[in-house]
Length: 327
Image (tube, rainbow, N blue to C red):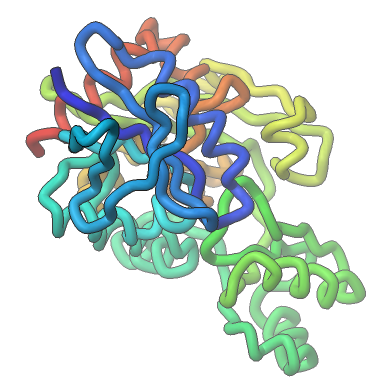
């Protein structure tokens, strides 16, 4: 029986979401075929939950000992959102140990984790993206220069967000210049680099995708509606949103978005379960961002998409384990 590490936690504000996602994966994977052990990686250390106790992981070979028996892992199912599970750090570690894992490789994870760099790369490949600017942390002391660039290239309203953060932590909608400084400070609390992005008017559409041995599967689309100014943390996880699956849009537009998602998955050499978010404007879909470790909790969108497609979470996660174990 294959021994699976379901990896949870992380070093970012998204840890609380990761714990829920990992629990969903643990409950869904078939315990008769796979021996699943939760592994928590956070500021307290690396520990496996085994026999109702937390045991330190030997990072030299990703194993642990219980009653003088060494337990090694055959596969890592990464359910950490943010650092170090989504930015390529864990992927590089597992590559060195030759342990297969459920996500994109180190290079692709690092690329997609930075929203600005990833969007610029895809924009060069013909994918429609929003106008944006990027600033390093020391730029906060040059507020007037930032304001000048926004007035020249972006205008208001706009969004200020960390380039390397998820679950909408540190994201603000800025409607006027007087709100900008507060938004910048908030974004820098969640990263050393931020981006300012032009406002896109339209309908927010999310597209899930994964690969099995049979094919690349693009799941039914979800439309996200919220009474908040945008799809923020409260809307995502505290019920302040309506998520409609399948999205009530035409078949032609649905197929166009799903085909673009498939193309992005192939062009970027994505692996595992990913989610691609768009704003559907009057002139067509515009890419917002790519999530290579999307949420799997009950409040998350991927489980809703899978249910709409008639795919159980057990089948979804098993397909990913089977395919990424050897590809």
